[in-house]
Length: 377
Image (cartoon, rainbow, N blue to C red; front, side, top):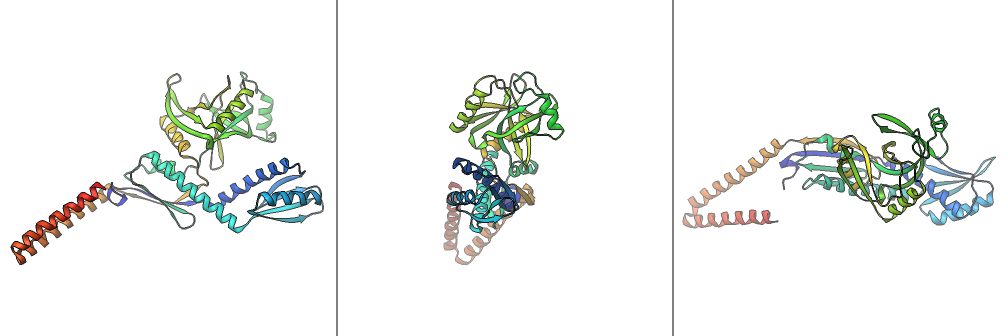
């Protein structure tokens, strides 16, 4: 296989957004704090984020002490400190420096693994994917000249979520509620939901969707693009693992005649790919419809199989190496070998006569055996 310098291709230098890594860790900690306090029946007033810290409010000092004891036991990577005000008793939680470094390091390693999976799906031979410094990754793709597609595949941070629809304008299913949709459009959105739009029949359809996730892309065990013969479009056939299959089965059993939305989240923006009505109890296999073309379906299936990036990445350097430069390097390599061999052969035969000729034959056999060994490897 020829490398980037001989075959041509693309070179990327990507920088991981470390701020997003910590933001995601803090959002996860908020959810974990709430679950822990509910499990232990410890009353609290709320959990909110204040900069790079989390604030947990309690009604009295006794409950705060009990909550601190429980949280310290479960989250040893965070520091907890008291903070009182005139109206409430607060607990301030921040990540320890070593924990921040560990989170960031893990994010870079996950991005490296995901990038390797995506490049393998692209079928690029002999790629180079390696970490450079603390927060940068070098990617070299020999033989690939389509830089636009390479950028789209490497940099996308798509995350797939499946959630239940709470209200919509389709009268054929249970959640038909135009009043809720109109209220959401005017800015009155119920807690635990968000207003998103789905492409349907060439127009945008408003949907009020629950923030509670049925399952995510982490529960996928397979994804393949195919042609929908019935509707003359492209679809992605998805297979779930055991955990995702159970979640899908339970949600669909309770949600017959309700709509379920497949949401793609990328760079903080959520897009509804499809929101079909559940007609019967579903298993661990389903299809995502609504793809614009075959290429979009193939790219989405690739991203789903390869997994999501732990954090967004920005392309800070991009270079394209043309194959003509590689061909010139190959020609120079052959020419230098031929000229050098011929010059040495002439000198040895002129100086050593017959023994020089024998030595030239031995040198030629040595060169050929070395090339044979390299080709075999």
